[in-house]
Length: 58
Image (tube, rainbow, N blue to C red; front, side, top):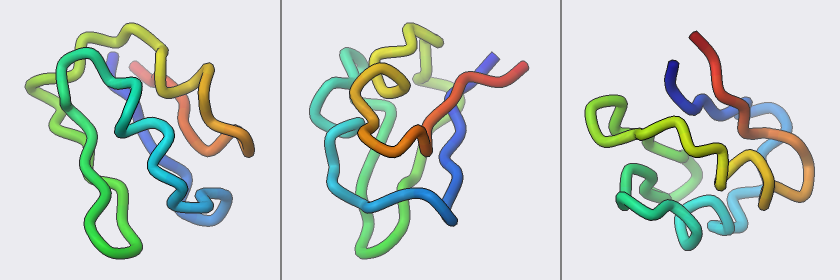
């Protein structure tokens, strides 16, 4: 399982970046980049996203 970002919904606010405990998420201009090797599937990014753009998938 890994966190994924829905680009159509994302506001690029950076909330997910700031709550990731293992720094697996980066905001690069208008793109959220998730390091799948670092992601621990904790769901912190999902809970903080104001528009539901983040989710954990298998």
